[in-house]
Length: 218
Image (cartoon, rainbow, N blue to C red; front, side, top):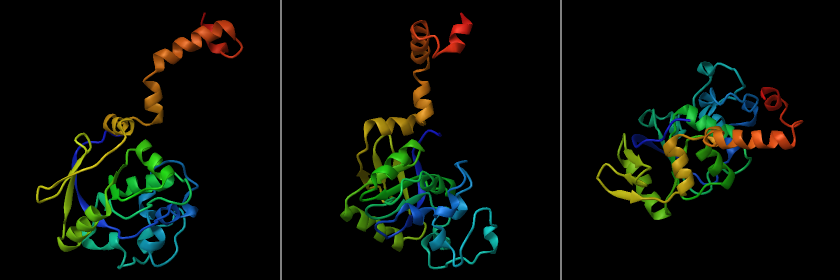
């Protein structure tokens, strides 16, 4: 997982509440567990006018011109602005993979579904919770100003607008550290590799049948 650094990105305004994970990545695309290749199918049912299937070439599909991410001004958006309860529905981790594979690095909303929130931080996607009044202003500024960008600074826990306004946000200290250091679950565990190895060696003397490889090393 890459370390999360301060970045400035184009904002796309998705003015919807209760965006569920089936809308983010439909169920037919859940067969793969490679974590990559899901970007072309992000928001598949909203993004295209005809149904899609896994491994199908999307170049022949009709684009929905009304969908926000299909509008040229929001091309290459890295920040998604949304409303309450984003990521509700099933617990599929593929939803986060699809957002990241598309290029989304941060999502700003008023609330997020619990499991989606956890999955996002485990995979390097920053979720920022702001109050509805602040969101309303950001939605308006994004719509009025083409190419509107925000600068996200996780270390300082603040968002900076093009006008220089600084918007603070809170984030759990443990989750913040994981993103800053680029630690997924495996990398987090490997920080304690020496302690784990020492424990296994001690236990191999008590229950050698559980650790046959360590017994052979002696």
